[in-house]
Image (cartoon, rainbow, N blue to C red; front, side, top):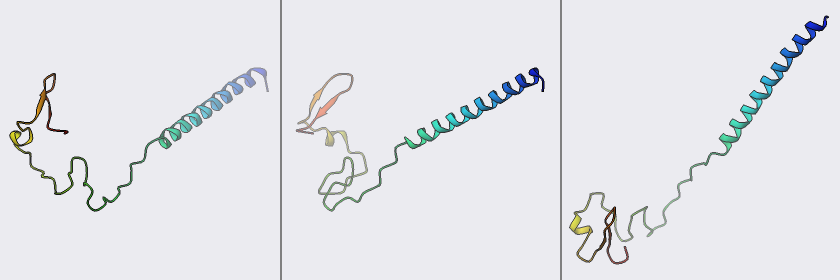
Length: 92
């Protein structure tokens, strides 16, 4: 073998090693990213007498229909003006 042939072979081999290491690093990063994903919480049963979900109130099933403004925002409501109007009825 001549010296010129050896240099070409070493360059090809170093490119192959570099390509293999780059692929391995990419694969490892993808595996870490996939393992870091949050798993969705498992649903739990609602105990009897507890509200069924967000906005649910004990003592009855919540209505799915929109209520009239006058029924939701009563005369007892205190309104704060700003970018948005914020209404507060008693402690709600």
